[in-house]
Image (tube, rainbow, N blue to C red; front, side, top):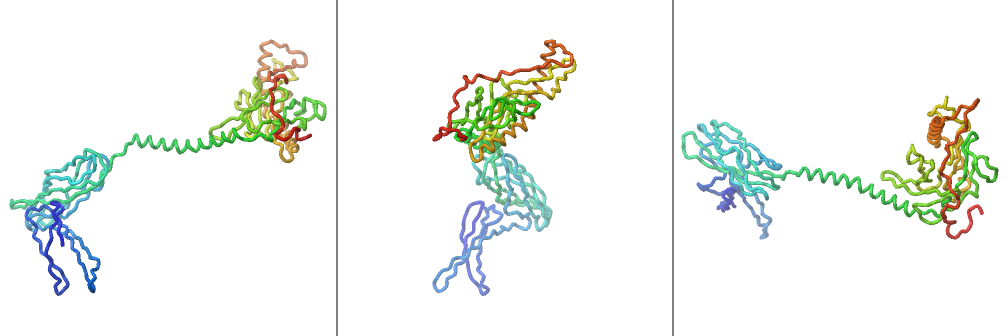
Length: 451
């Protein structure tokens, strides 16, 4: 049997007698006159022995109130918990007291003595220190208690609240101490939290994008073009649709269809930039995009170019966009835009080009040599013929505005019956002698696939 004084920190033993006929053990303890504890912690351990073998003891702990004279008020709250406090400020709670059994009593908050404080916290102050409260006979009253912290810390703060109890007859008061505890939390660093959140958000978004970009760049840098072929065929888009402007199996002017002799291998196993073309150099290179799959671009300096996936800049139309893997795709390099009906400055509408515009240029196509490649080349021919007119709409409109402006500036007369034919021209064509080498057939083969 042991009795602990939580305020003084003393542990005292007590003599136990029994058990009596009812199986009850008894002990007697006289509280020292100088103790201020409102309750003492009593611990009892009972050990049983069976056939000479000691069993595990049964331990019982209980807080026992320290009785006060009947003329003094008493403390109902034996242990006060103030919750938690974040940063600096106040931790609050309520202390419940009961009035004397005879007469009126008085309760005063004497002070707070800290016992354990978190690191960084030097002291706690009792805000209502010195305040006194009257308690009527037999009544119960709650008293607000507030501890103020000027520093922030993390941990459990403990201490003792000293309370003085007074009787109405002016006799000597009695001081009792109530254990107090509450959780302290360091105030969060808001700028650091915001910065960390932004950093994590940027990392969460940026790292996947970076990984996607690296994978895309690796694929575009090291992707194989061993089996990719290109074609460069002069063609004219006019009243009869898309026709070949150079001889093939038929004469010039025949409906546009790719032929076997049109195709050459790109050459080289890997390339991000390559130059192809039979009638002048055509630059093809990878266009890296950050938020989508990459594409390839086709460009001829000084010429309008449209592609199977549109253009880089809708207004200038100088760079065509085609699929990254090149095959199957196409681009059209504009050499000349001609208006056979001419420009009648008196009635010409700069925003409405005539329907007889003729566009000459070169069809640049890419196709791999896999299964049924010529059938796929024929299908690609139909795709070019069917969609080129729509792709060239902006180019024709821009050349028509230029033609109208030039005719108006030069004062072109209005001939009888029809306006003078007009051609805007183009500077895209280059001599074949300026064409850099574009490689040869794939390794192990010295013939094109149709030979």
